[in-house]
Image (cartoon, rainbow, N blue to C red; front, side, top):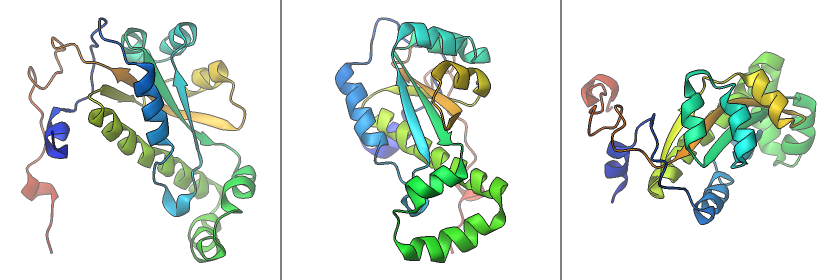
Amino acid sequence: MNFLDLAQRRYATKKYDLTKKITPEQIEELKNIIRLSPSSINSQPWKFTFVTNEKIKTQLAAHSYTNENSINAVGLVVVFSVMEDIDHFEQRNISILPEGWVKGFYEPLVRSRGDQATKSWMENQVYLSLGYFLSACMSLGLDATPMEGINRQGYHDILQQEGYAPLFAVTVGYADQTDPMHPRVLPKSRFEREEIIVSI
């Protein structure tokens, strides 16, 4: 199956098949793939937490608003977090980069804009990894749902990962074919190419 076919099949799964479980081998492959995610100047200001522990999943589900049932129905939840402390980020991640990347891009175009802009830029790098991860799931025949609808502080308290702030989570599993959001039931809706793509 080519990538276009996969893209046409992918959707934000709301109902998972409880009889089909993601395998440890698939989880390991996803870990290996997500590690290779792209980021601006290879800054990598992230942490990816793979949660399969049922107790922890249930706790996270309780802080996931309308996504609670989805989390309880899958074997894997991945939490995407960003580094919180800019100084630590610069000492750990930026200091090992080529000087030209730091002096020519990071310092004049990112850091010079202040703390808030720098943190926003760091968060953007984590979001870049999301698209990469969803594509990886598709390539393995898995269904996934990105969820910004989480209580970030609640996730932070449960995971207790000092120095990292959760941004969003992704459930991963196999879609139930009776899911009312499944493309077979509710066809994908996108703007026409001519409305959103410009060729110059």
